[in-house]
Length: 574
Ligand code: PEP
Ligand code: MG
Image 1 (cartoon, protein in one colour):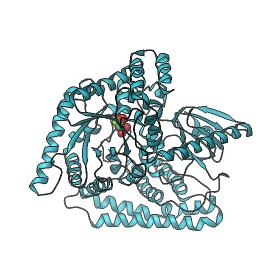
Image 2 (cartoon, helix red, strand yellow; image 1 turned 30 degrees about the vertical axis):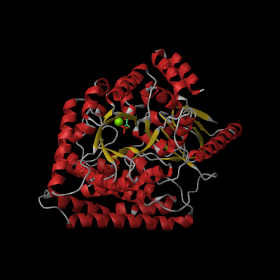
Image 3 (cartoon, helix red, strand yellow; image 1 turned 120 degrees about the vertical axis):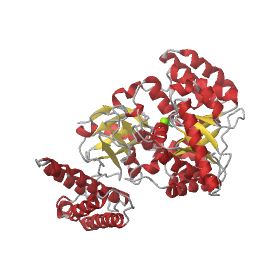
Image 4 (tube, rainbow, N blue to C red; image 1 turned 90 degrees about the horizontal axis):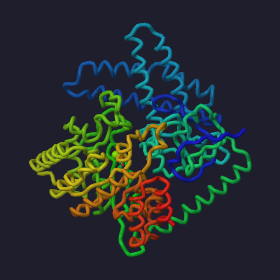
């Protein structure tokens, strides 16, 4: 019997495929069945991952830095021992043979079984060793997921599978970029959680906040994901399947047609050029941005260089990443946002998070609390500025004191490079993200000290409406068209115009084609979004006459009531 689940659509389009469930293991592991002829290759992949991780641990052991705590060597010894134990190195292989499952799944299941055994031990010290087992298993899992197998999955007659998870973290999503799913669905999450942003960036139909999809859906169930309405249909009947196949084909056709806009300039009907820039997460994403012919990188979320690892990236490693992007963009602007971890982007080296992580030590607050991390990053960014038009963007500014401190540290980083004769752009522009209502209301003060502003509407909405962007229970209240949100955006843009400072939008609103004309009508001339959305936004730009849209946009700002706002928006988009 077919069943529909309703959540929120986070990435448009339609997907039809078989469910692929993710385990509840901390690093959620994919699960698929293998045809018998692929089991041996899968076991070899598992062995290779174990060998790599063991070698990494041995290398670490031989390069323990001077002054490191004496426990470090003992800790590495324990991890090497765990990795050599047959319970971890052999038992998953037996499971693969027995169940015909993939290596990640076999390891995750075996780890859970081991951890359960530790849990039953009375001795506190021994019981806590379960953490070491988990950490070692996670290292092997990460290695496996970084080198996916080539064995075709047994499922999916249409060759498409849909990932079904209770929750996914942004770092999981980065790893899943390498897999080929037709769509994603999760029980938790909000429309602008970083997980949703990444799902959208993959341009895959997805729905979140489905509450109990993971419990109701069985491995291999047929699913339809309607990413527009946020609906998932389990085991649809043939009539519904036919209807959605039609919709999916139309959607794919529209996507194909959009490709024709790739080389056209981004200019409104009344001849105003609009800057369409890309948001990227990793240096390698620059290729996709170039593919879409973007005007620059409007937001490089540098924190992704810090995820999925146990240690901080060195200055050199960061420099190489930033330089790569700067060089590839060949003189087009590259806005590198300084580290924004905390809240839903957690890293192992961060102290335990507070009860309210979105209001805690996040982004610039964390960087100012840990100046050595910030200074390392600033030096890396400054060094990269000798290779292109690099700009610095400070996230989550709320008070002018933070801005003063950040500017002082930028000055200090410059001083260090100057003293060492290392080249950098002396006139590098520094901008601030306006994503906290306090900064939006006081943006005049910030703008006077900065070269440019960038509206982070995802957080601006979260903090203005007091809605946790990752919480599915309040996801339906997340409203970019709320008069308070639009008022803050409008105020920031007016101040920017008055002071001659450029203002762009780099939150998800910039990549939503339903809002493009409204933002254009409000006076926005610079948008930054994931490259996957550039063409649908460009299509809107090409059909907009600013002179005609601006009065409607002003009317919308005064509309007040939600139904009236939607009415005017419809008028703008007609
Ligand atoms: C935002 O808050 O709008 C933004 C662009 O930053 P992030 O989504 O990474 O918090
Ligand atoms: Mg933000």
